[in-house]
Image (cartoon, rainbow, N blue to C red):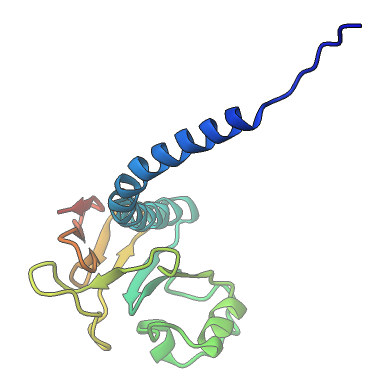
Length: 186
């Protein structure tokens, strides 16, 4: 009586594992050297996308949008005036909210019908927001946070530029906004 037996021998399993181990040992150093650049490009892409999004939202909603950069993140704030005429928030909040905004400020803006979106860069380890690419990467100083404001026609105003740097590498990109609303990356 002849029976067909299907299966894998121990020798076949051991050869397969040896081949997988050799390929992994060759690929791992390349992956580890590639990953920081990928993380950096992801952070730059996210910030660029949020800046583009703020500009488009300003045109779409016919309301200004401001992006304020601070610490390890940034915030997007809709409008310069409340949608609700009964809004009683101190003028300091409307002119220049703190960065990052406190929970009370966020609640006050949302009560007035203004959207606030808080973003941080915790998904991108070792990526820093800095004031300048020419000096060693340091956090943005409190009180001198750069911001970009997009107006309903797509034009923009700004206070400086913001740089995105990768610690331990020479990767650094600087975002500036022209008055025509163009995003410039250097």
